[in-house]
Image 1: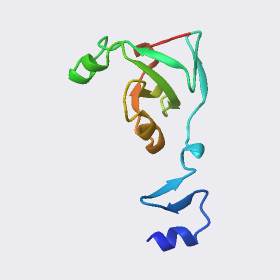
Image 2: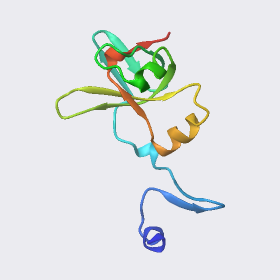
Image 3: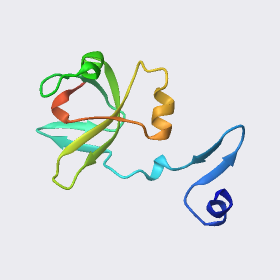
Length: 115
């Protein structure tokens, strides 16, 4: 399987170190890098404060409420609903989550942009 992937000319490269990993994948990730919603501009790399519990409130929302996060990418679904993909700033695995594309998704009304 790995040989098949290496032989095909894909836009990513497999590196063999201690761990095998694909590089160059996140640069081609779908989504928007900025979007204006209700007069507020959301951009990739912006810091936001999570304001959870308005529509939903489970244990994860209680733990993440008022945490600072970084917008990694902005997704828009087929119904034009906007999702902000974020990573939590004080998470020790933030760089790994970013590299592997493991984001938490929130709607714009659940975050507050920090200027």
